[in-house]
Length: 128
Image (cartoon, rainbow, N blue to C red; front, side, top):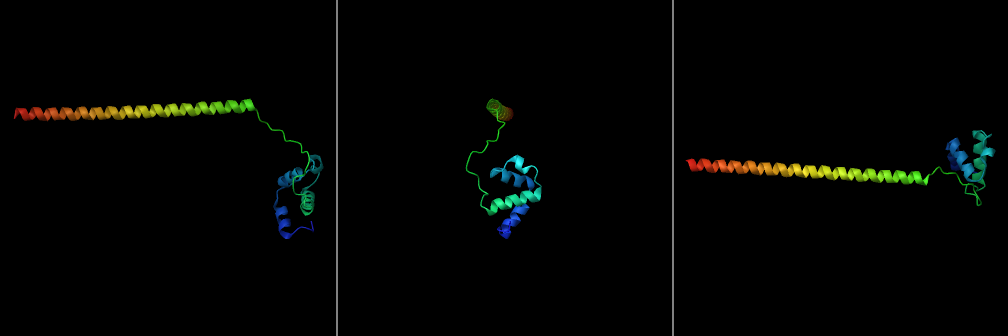
């Protein structure tokens, strides 16, 4: 760790233990190799990797991490979300239609009331 700059030392010391372990796994150390080490030993090991320039991905086969990804389940989730979106769209369209009908009904009622008022005024004028 003596070969590192002060800023490198500080950034390494600020790393959390889990982050150090993930970085060491990333550059090729095995989980079994790292398990018995305490934080100071992990820091020392990562410092050596950085000093040697080994803080980059190792070239070679790296065991792929198993992914818990079920394609069929994701497809079902997507279909569910699509149906949910379509149902929301239909509900919104129905609500808009209802609102338009209410507005039209109110307009017609106002027209009718206005027409009745005009007829009443006309009939009163005839009586005079």
